Length: 248
Image (cartoon, rainbow, N blue to C red; front, side, top):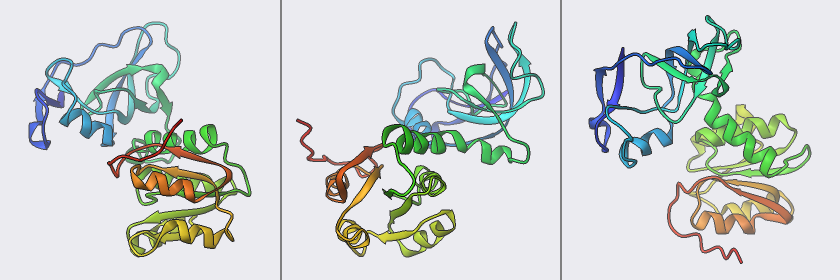
């Protein structure tokens, strides 16, 4: 089969499209004929900075496709089922063997390309909002970097849960694109302080939940945007830099 492989770390130029052996399908695994992949931030980090465990190394977390073989004794998923598959590597290939436990059925009518983009963004957002923060109907949430993958997923999930959704982005154009997803109030952080605007929107109370994927100074300022006994969930450090938060 063909696959995008690396032999060393580096930029996109280290990727090679080469022939590699078809993967085996042992007990507990399924073999997927890959129809679509997503390219996640972790994929870029793996290519650029994490030494490959063996070469040639096939990068890639996520793919969607059709099950063409199952390991011994496995009933579900079955051959012919459409699935999305998540694993540490191996998605950037024509075929991929993954544990059956890391696959999910693709609903009828959902395009494989869309399905391949769902688990990381939606799964991360759901875990942050409902497992970590226990977001409830009637609460107010501030979602930073709303135009990113996790941000867009979080806006949709929070709105569906009945929350009031505030989000930040770097331009008015991005904020306009978020309104159909469920955005109630947008803040262009390039033009105004999101803390001041949040306080204004909440009559000085602050928000119940902040989902911060930026880190750095943004994390510190997010604390100031919280209501009393509010919850701050930090899920990334895209902004880099020290946070200055005292944990003790």
